[in-house]
Every structure is written in C-alpha cells, then in structure tokens.
Length: 296
Ligand code: NAI
Image (cartoon, rainbow, N blue to C red; front, side, top):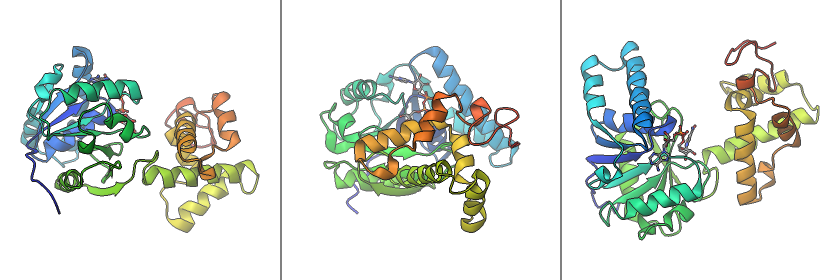
C-alpha cells in the first residue's frame, strides 16, 4: 500500500440524480460528511427527496433507525454552489453521460479543489482518460463506478488510466472498503469488467434466439436452472431496456472492436419497432402492464 492517508472526512458528490443521490446516501451512511451539488433548486429538491424516500424504505425494513436516518440526511449539505466542495479531498461526479459536459465540470472542479484532491467519475461508458485531460491533474482522476441502486449493490469498479497515480488507487480502494463495498480495479475500456462480460453474454443470448437455436423460455431457463442466475438473459434485457442495452453494446463495440459486443441485428430492429422491454410492455416477452412480472 502506498496510501497517503488523504482526509476523506468530507466528500463532494456532483449531480444528485438516480446515481448521485444513492452515492451521497452511501457516504453519509458510513460516517462521511457529504457536499451534494445540483444545478438548480428544483433538481436539488429532487435529490433530497430521493435520499429521503430511499432512507424511509430502509427505516421501514428495520435497517435504519429514525435517529440514524436523521443523522444520515443531516450529514449531507445540499447546495447549488459548486464552490462549497472546495475543501473536499475527493469529489465524485455523477452528472449526465456526455463527454463535453463532464469535461467542463472537471475543468471547473480542477480550479476549485486542492491540487492533491482526487476527482472521480461515475461514468458507465465514457473514457476516463478523456475526462481527465480536462484537468491539470490527470494522475489524480479515476473512475469510481457504482452500481444501481448504489445503496444496495456491493460492487464498485475503480478505473485507472495509464497515468493514474498508485496512491490514488490505494486511497480510493480503501475508501470503497470503508463503505462495505467490494472494490475491483480495471483499465479504462468501455464496459469495465462487469458490463463488458455481462453484455457480451446477453448479446450472445440474443444471437441464439435470433438464429432460432432455442426458444426464449428455454434460453432463460437454461441460465436460471443450469447456472443459478436469478433471471434469464432475455428477461434481464427486457428489464434493462433494449434501447439502453443496444447503446451500451454499440459503445463497447465501437471502442473495443470485439465481435462479442457487435449488437445482434434483431436488437436494433426491436428498438426501432418500439419493443423496448418492460417499459413499453413488449420486448422479448409481452407484459400486461409496464413493470408487471406477468409474462404472456
Ligand atoms: P440522472 O440523469 O438521473 O442524474 C444526473 C443529475 O446530474 C441530474 O439530476 C442533473 O440535474 C445533474 N446535473 C447535470 N449536470 C450537472 C452539473 N453540471 N452540476 C451538477 N449537477 C448536474 O443520471 P444517472 O442515471 O444518475 O447517471 C449519472 C452518471 O452515472 C452517468 O455518468 C451514468 O452513466 C452513470 N451511471 C448510471 C447508472 C444507472 O443505472 N443509471 C449506473 C452506473 C453509472
């Protein structure tokens, strides 16, 4: 370990949407002070409500006492002023998945936090290296990829670029462990570890279905009952959304040129036809109502 023992007592989280609100909750629940930054008062309030509702559910399930909930929410400073993150030794970005927008934010953050502070991105598919070049400190920029929902999923992927400093990785991995998460470290390639493997597998299942090699039910049953997966690949794709799955595969294919990730043609056809999965009521299966588990 080359950890420098950075003071992570206060952590910045930029963007309090689906992921950022969950990430802020995870830090606050584990004893950290959080500066949560949003663009507008309206989106800030949405972020606050997200944390409130998520912790309400934890209280109902008996996983959090009401006092703990009050302390947790109180540990998050909700603000629209990004300069409030100036004393943070780590800032985690979870804003929209657009490179120019993320680069502009990193440029701003670079001018706000101390020179030795770490800037992390929760990006799912963008190049961490390209984001890091917007700063004067590419060696102290990492990917910190939480899974959805962040308070529940245990994995955190830490993405190192070719210039990430070793002590930065050590510090961030130690921090992830302090959140009771399992950190894994990998290089800067779309899909990182989990999605690169998962989406290659899902795509292969679609190709099997497309070739009439086996029925949708038999493909899914094979993986559930033969491999112990909680869901079959085609049912899982319906849950993720076929449009989202297509975009993820396409990005990985364009970056890595691995045939495994070349989207199966039928995926694009289904997206074009509006068969996006559960959210539109029809994908590989037909659902009586969006989000209904009933398959007809
Ligand atoms: P989201 O759209 O729910 O939230 C983004 C939030 O960022 C919005 O509330 C928006 O107001 C705010 N925002 C935008 N620009 C901002 C700025 N300059 N300053 C402060 N706040 C700003 O998006 P979501 O789903 O939370 O995704 C965020 C990031 O996390 C993306 O990079 C995405 O790829 C990644 N991610 C998403 C996962 C998911 O399942 N949704 C899973 C893992 C990573």
